[in-house]
Length: 103
Image (tube, rainbow, N blue to C red; front, side, top):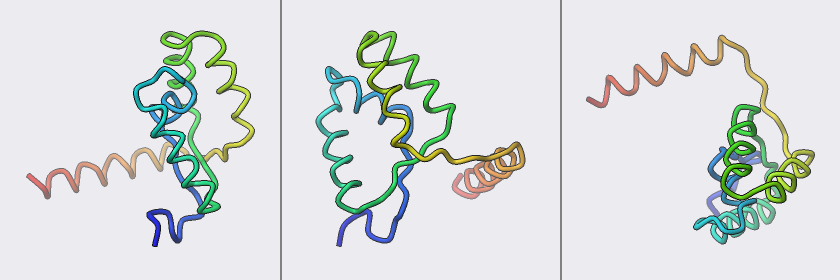
C-alpha cells in the first residue's frame, strides 16, 4: 500500500515546486521521486496561486530565467484549488483551536 493510495489529488507547495524546477536545489532528486510516485498513483497535482507566485519569485532569484520559464510553462499540468476569504478565516480558526489544544 502506497502513501498516496486513495488520493486523487496532491497539493504542491512552493518549496516543492522550487525543488522540482531548480535542478541545483538540494532537494531536486527527491522532488522528482515524489512526482514519479504521484504519477504512479494517478493523482492529479494541484496548488494555489500564492504558491505559484512564491515559487516563481524564488526560482528567478536563485535559479535564473530558464528554471523560472520552465516552471511557468508547466502550469498547464496543474489543477488550481479555488477558495475565498471564508476559507481563509475558517482555516485560521481551525489552526488556532488545534494549536491551543496542544499547548
